[in-house]
Length: 340
Ligand SMILES: NC(=O)c1ccc[n+]([C@@H]2O[C@H](COP(=O)([O-])OP(=O)(O)OC[C@H]3O[C@@H](n4cnc5c(N)ncnc54)[C@H](OP(=O)(O)O)[C@@H]3O)[C@@H](O)[C@H]2O)c1
Image (cartoon, rainbow, N blue to C red; front, side, top):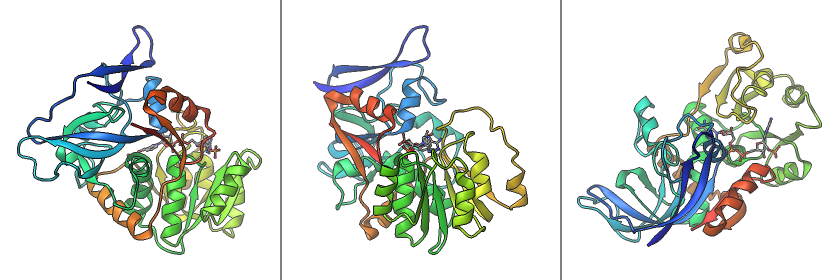
């Protein structure tokens, strides 16, 4: 028997409940592997999923969490990609191998439309995993599939980030701290915002060029504008959504790039004119995590620069509900991990 969690729809309610259960050890079928999961990490998406606010929520029971890492425990018929003991990390989209996004990939978004990683053992397609960089622990690798790949996709794959450019990252959650680490390693200058001076001090230690407390400085867009000598930033990691997009458009440089990523301020339409996108010739890209090929390229970059994910706190598998509560509290800096 093995332990796993399920997100289970609550009858006549929108939210789902997190249920713990013992189940029989799953066997891998042809083309599949069984992975002994050693660690998972949480993303804001997992809160949306539990609240029933995500478009990719399954209608029945689903194993939650997109992000997990461990080792190959058994291989199914025909699998040559991995052998028992290999260290692997799951991709967010189990079927988005390479090339442009296709709507059919939505049906295999781990921890949403298909089973995720919050379990001692998972069985899935052998091709839906990537090799874990040898210098990282499983807990560190488990932080990468969603938050880090999203930041990488936005900055590098779509944004063509170059040394000397400026990047604006909003808040100090998972995506933004990875954006800070990736951009700094690439030789860019990062301005990061936070509601907490203590977190901004930590961001400085990680290499932030400038910091802005968005709670104290409501006009943080104006502050970014003056910090960049009225030029604006080359890239914005837009994780806020409708409540921050207007200011992000004010803060971006002419010809700059906004990666539209998050919904921290909700799903309502933005109450601002989108016209600055036109007058500044801005590239506005919708970013939805990334492909397995991007994940492999990102891991090579991480290894070259020996970047280690910032883990805020680690919980045991038994304490998974507390890990959700810690994320919901918003006091974290970087990533929250569950060891399995
Ligand atoms: N499109 C995609 O593929 C994709 C992938 C990953 C995440 N996302 C989205 O991106 C967002 C961030 O995800 P995450 O997992 O990194 O979240 P997270 O780790 O939970 O980060 C939350 C942090 O965001 C900051 N924040 C909250 N409200 C803010 C606001 N109004 N302005 C600026 N910062 C604010 C806070 O930082 P401080 O405490 O420092 O103030 C908070 O601690 C979420 O909406 C998530 O759904 C999208």
